[in-house]
Length: 286
Image 1 (spheres, rainbow, N blue to C red):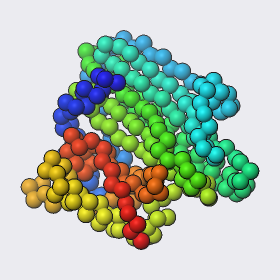
Image 2: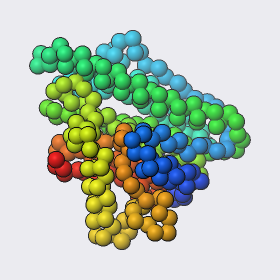
Image 3: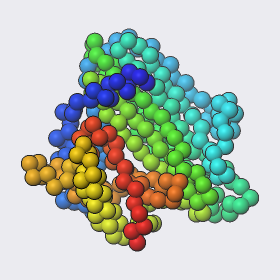
C-alpha cells in the first residue's frame, strides 16, 4: 500500500487525459445519452513469472462465507462479505483485490415486497461489482503475460459509507498503476424503506442533470476562489473543450450519513490528476 501511495503522490498526467477530456465534451453535447465508461489506464509493459493466489470463498452459502471471515452484520438490512480475493506480490507486480458482495437480511420490520426489491437491488449491484473487478484483474493478468520487465499494481477495496435507518451506501475503490496511477470510485446506494437502488431523479426530479450541474459549477468556483491551489476544468479559455459542462445521466453518487447526496468524479474527469477523486456535497436543491 505504501508503494501505491508513493506512486500516487508522484503521479504524472497519463496519455489518456486528452481522450478523457474529448469524451467529456462529447458527453456535454449529448447529455441525454449515457456516457461510456472511461477505460482505465492500461498497464503497459510487462511480464514476470506469475505467482498468483486466486481464492474463491464459498458462495453457495453466503452465511458460510461470512462466518468463515467473522464479518459483522452491517445494519439491520444488509451485510457485506468478501466473496473473492486475488493477490499477487512480486518485485514488479502487486495486486490486492477484495471483491465485496451485498447480502440482504430480511427482518421483521421489512415487508415481503421490500425484501424482494432489496434482493433485486443487491443482485444488480453485485453483478456490476463482479464485472468491473473482473475486467481489472484480466487486464492486469494479460499485461503480465504480454510484456517483459514491466511494472503494474492494482487494488480493489470497499467501504460502507452510510448505514442508517433510511440509507445504505457502499463505496468501491479501484486503483491501477503502471508508472503513473489512476483511481476511480463506484458507489451504490439503496433506500431501505423501499429496497430499491437510489437514482438521482429520486432526489431532484427529471431536471436533475441541469440542477446538479449548476450546483457543482457553483461549488467549483467557490473552492477555486478560496484556495489558489484548487483547480477544476471550468471556464478555461485556453482549453475550453476540457471544461466541465454537465454531469452524466448515470453520474456516480452516494448518500452520506447526514442524508445528503454526494456527487463523485474520478481522477482527471473534472480536474488535474493531483486533485485526485473529487466530491461535491449537494444541499437541498429542490
